[in-house]
Amino acid sequence: MAASDVEAIIADTFRLTGIKLTADDPIIAVLVMQQHRINQAFKEQQVEMRPLPRLFTLLLLLIVSQAKCL
Image (cartoon, rainbow, N blue to C red; front, side, top):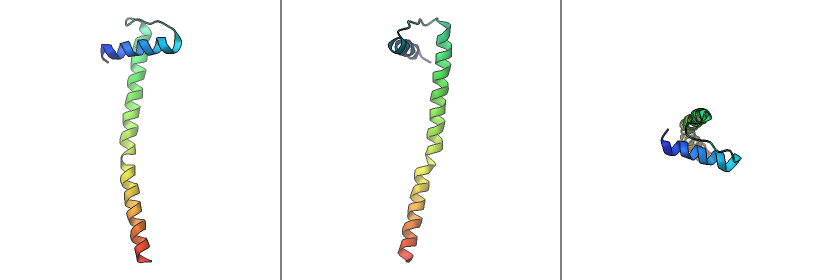
């Protein structure tokens, strides 16, 4: 993470908890790792969700084509 990301974590921690951290505070490493894992999980979820709109489109086309046959 960039220094600006660390500063954002420090600012958010202070804003939410009133606890002042510094860039060399050991908990920063834990928070950076946690943020990285959250970001990675979010990206993976987005990748898994992408095929769904296509699936719904195919289902809709199937329904419409079946309705035309009636």
